[in-house]
Image (cartoon, rainbow, N blue to C red; front, side):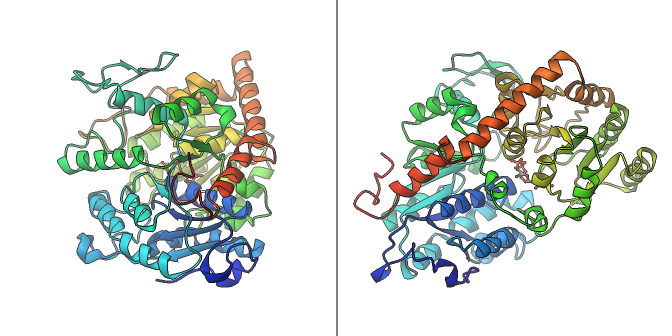
Length: 517
Ligand code: UDP
């Protein structure tokens, strides 16, 4: 076990006093390895530290390596953030040694991986008891239900962390608590989300619930365990902002009967300081697949709002045929584009690679920039040259686009992405859907679903176009960005919620559970 941040980072004196008691709140973050969970959790820890809290992030080495650069960059600003590594017990969990060392834990080992994470409870607890200052709150990714026991043993409250919109959380919660799928045989049958004022229609295939619908019994048991831990949490931290979805934030807090702290967009942490492009580009991974300065120079040469950025996040990967249709659609749209083409799992054969090389040659380096691997997404989205985002609707990507004031072409692949698409298209009115209705990734039965080149072209032309509708979409997107920026500033809702967390979970009589009341 090693602490990656030297004790000197705590020298500000705001974290410790005599006897190892802490004067400031001390949040212990237990994130999940997936970038869509890890990146926002780390950003939230950094934000809480700017409000005076000490934050300790605990993680296995294969996770810590993904965020070490970001955390170490805080040393320059002397933020009290620690990154502490806990090796996984491969043998006990049945996880093949090093199975978590690549960019992804292979899907077939996910169960063993969750088990290995749960086995970290005892070493984390011993570490926290032995290393002052004593924690005042556990902030757990919602997929780690075992942190209930960790917090109870330590006698401190536990908050669930979500990087999801409150709209999605509430829809999913209502679908489950009102048993909306009871008697529904076909997973593609439309179902109205119960308990909401407005009418939203989903299918079980689009919103099955976390870890639900996997035809293996222990996942269903795990889903129940996760749900119990969510229901027993002392509160919820969500990467969204109040002004984006006030009725759904209030609705979720009421439905769960717990306090909800909206603290987003947490990516604004990076905008508020002079972070190096290279550090920002490696946010969430070891390194960017493109030189970030080169990428910025490419964008600098483009007209404002003229470029389309395309990415399906850290997990989803377009099938080979889809790569071809997407590429041809982007080419036909006539707009310059930056396309983050993932090819990490050697998914693409030489035919696809050849197609991509030919596309680059035909369209020309001046009009297309292909990034084969991890893209410096935050740098790209916040550049003036970018005018729209073709996205898989992962919530982090969605919120980063909202913060950048961009309209979106929505192309959900799995999990909460279908609900996020509804949020963008039906609630916020800033997106155009490509019309995907069923999961494209993690399909129970493999099924080819192809979005044609003409659909891609049409959707891109529609968000980038000059018409009244496109202009109205852009106006709404700009207004949301202004609200997002205001939420993060002093006096804004997210800023105030961060401060409230730091105040409430400072040590004192209220900290030992119940502080969230
Ligand atoms: N991301 C990035 N570069 C990439 C792909 C993803 O920086 O090439 C970041 C992106 O900015 C976001 C996160 O990884 O913060 C992805 O989270 P999201 O919820 O959008 O999707 P997921 O990867 O979980 O499907």
